[in-house]
Length: 436
Ligand code: GDP
Ligand code: MG
Image 1 (spheres, rainbow, N blue to C red):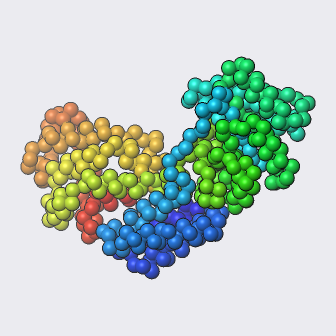
Image 2 (tube, protein in one colour):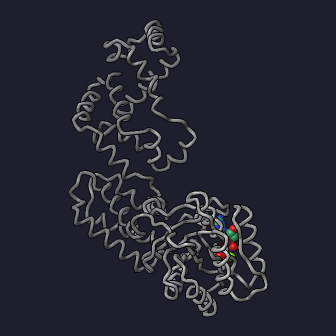
Image 3 (tube, rainbow, N blue to C red):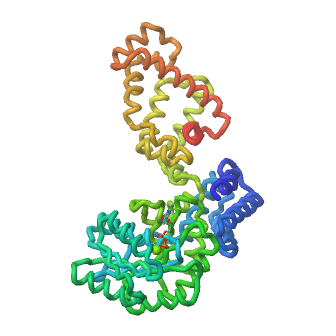
């Protein structure tokens, strides 16, 4: 999905001017991408219609950077579609009872463990896991294995075939032993059937949980929607857990489920380990689907800080070949004003992963600044005059080495060339440099 969307949005990102035809073409691509990600047809169509209306309403075509605005609208709308802010779990009961529902293999047992571990460590709760999958003895053992891993007690009653009775006994056990959260793991089947629905509904009615969660495998795509609807019709559940997001980056299920059942997605599962649990953030999911990092906020922040007038002055200097070290220093200060370097780099699409291991911090600029400060005004405007003895003096004055001075000169030279190349554009040399 992200590759396709990238392509679709690419047209808009670069373009200085956008025509209505252009917008329509792009929206068609966006829709196709959503459909490919198993997003329901109606939802995809509605989505692109809304984006189109918003785009026209905000006069995208007449703004300075229509592409960026368009990207922002698509992203905002996608975020909206998946729910506003992250929602937590209702822990008001004593004990708070959480019921898991979902098909077999969706990840209920695994997630029960993850949630218990999460509540234990993050919220200092004392959870109890209850094994209500009575059809497969192995399922009970599995929950015990999970419980042992995270050091959480598991209540089970092998041989008892009545899941309602086990659930009730489990809650009683929790009350008697000071557990303030009870997580009830249930049985699922490979497809929705009446027996399973009756059983989960009976458990639900008998124990009246504070929180009923529907667990769904994010890789099941379009089927996930039907399953979610069937469970919601019977249980009117409180939230959705989207598992196995590590295996497939498509966010289609997240979009569709939210639109069809209108229940918040609360957590995501991102692996088999007990720690592989994350609170669901719609905006982050939208980013992931769009595969563009936090481009929008990067652009917003950069625009806030970047002084248009300065940019124009700089452009003139570059054109006249007068770009010097003072301007270089100025540029560095501009970048620093925008915020922490690591944050900024992380927002550049694709760069996040690449730069993770490289240590960029504001200190990286300290040496550069020191070197420039040790130059005379004349040297700053005409770097060509820097001979060996001058370099030596500068290195000494700035507490660096001649090697570092040479390195900076080389960088400066490259940057000047790059800027000269870019002056044909809109003058936002710095922005361009960061985007490339
Ligand atoms: P249940 O039948 O609903 O209880 O599902 P299980 O919890 O037994 O999970 C089914 C399979 O999916 C197991 O092999 C789990 O290890 C695996 N699984 C569960 N959640 C995740 C996840 O978030 N990522 C990955 N990669 N595997 C998961
Ligand atoms: Mg299970």
